[in-house]
Length: 218
Image (cartoon, rainbow, N blue to C red; front, side, top):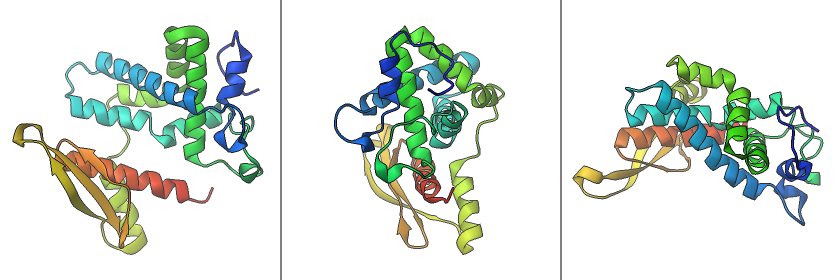
């Protein structure tokens, strides 16, 4: 079993949380991952709301997005030794698990803690296992802006910045939303919505980074 800072009354919940869908047949951790994702969003949002009493919603959203990003959750999963104890299919055995899978494992385990011990237990688990990234945002030092990170990556890779295209917009002037996609050297990444074009570009850059990070050799 992994080094999880929580004692389960029902160990079968932890076993299920560590069972990836690639195993095939029977139950897997996808439902727990869904639950853990929602619980984590609430925990982090509540912490940020209490710490940063004067920050606008947009800044709080950006802080939260960094804390619950795949990179941060994957690091937490490794610290908990989830990588070595997860049950995965034969195609994923004997190789390093990608960040996306590790992040999902973390969320599933958090969901299992919530089911076993309730919200207080889940909150304590999250605050303990994400102590360093949470402390970073407590000190108002979030991760770098995803547009800046993507631009630096593109400059190093191809010598020019990415481009952003508005695919769609909806709503009236006071409640408009934009769908934007990032393109790098002719490659188009998953699109993202935002309430302003600038916000949509930021989320589109984050989507591109997620994709690029998942392709990085480990």
